[in-house]
Length: 257
Image (tube, rainbow, N blue to C red):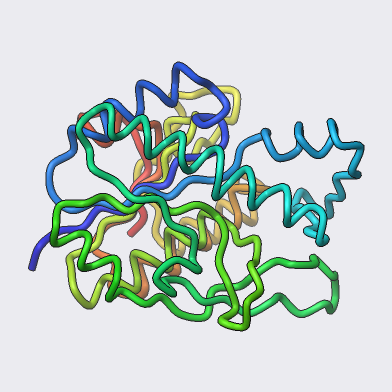
């Protein structure tokens, strides 16, 4: 069975022009089938501020009202996604930009309003692999933004880490899938101020202990939950760390077991 790499890049890479350029140049050289998933960075918030639209957050998560959905669709599925695709073309990596609505690839349910109404936020219900697999077999690289749909004409803002995890699970029936979360740290750190304090291997017991000790908290919790969700649903390999881990196995990073 062929290997498929699903690689997610975070906002800190997207927000830094030089870091994004360097990443995409390296990504283009990765051999074999691959899918890129990206978040939105700070651009959507910047645009909302310029338009005098309030940015509402709860526990670090964006409330997506109708106006906010318009902005993030323009930014995520438009400017950021097409910029990435254009850059990849310049590096001879033939790619196509996707939202979950394109090819009916990712279907979500609108998140229930209780206990918090997050607005137009989607929780992934299913991944349809057929359209994307045709592209993969034609050596075309799909580039997914963090927008899905509900099959009733409604677009939904959806966590990019979750999209990456669900794509890896969905394609595990067709490929040996490997999931990589690339961000600005070397991996999961025992000390957030010490980039060398990497926890190189985490299983469910270690994860439980790290949560109880408060080592893993805030934004890392949903990321790790997505990692364990993937590894428990036939995804072959899940790693977290800087993009360099994709090109050098000796680069420090965290592997989920």
